[in-house]
Image (cartoon, rainbow, N blue to C red; front, side, top):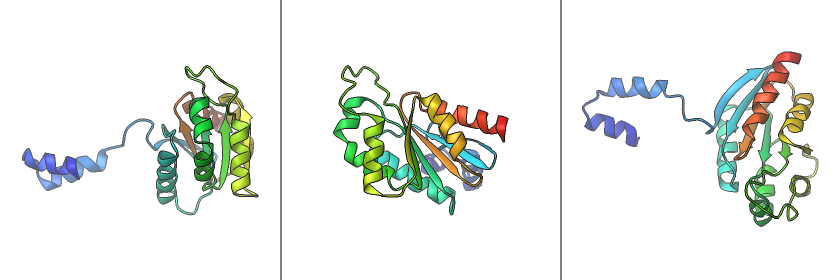
Length: 178
């Protein structure tokens, strides 16, 4: 809305504003549609805070109604994961299925205070029966997802480290193997 107001102030017609806004594809790594293969749609998002994850999940459900949504998350730093483990588990449990890659350490020196497995267990405790896994590194996560997803699924990959590679590898694998 602010962009439309600024454009109008500059003398651009409402029709011109609408036409340009209709072609805007968004920005990279913010609910970015990476592709579709074997009936599975893959999105990528930089979200690595519980609030951002919650809003991105809600937007994904709005964009892809009626589809099973996988929340695929690469936690960003061990300290952040440990400090907000409960909040991350709460929000990830809102998805239909969850995959958690290994924690991206960044510059975090203490790699013992949290793990993807601990976060996966916390998600499962909050919502018994939800499919949840912690397969390992981003490559292993993509491989495991390729074996688990089915046509009609939406895979929402989130995180700030190397998470974008999960979606790339998943699409490659699904395109190759159908």
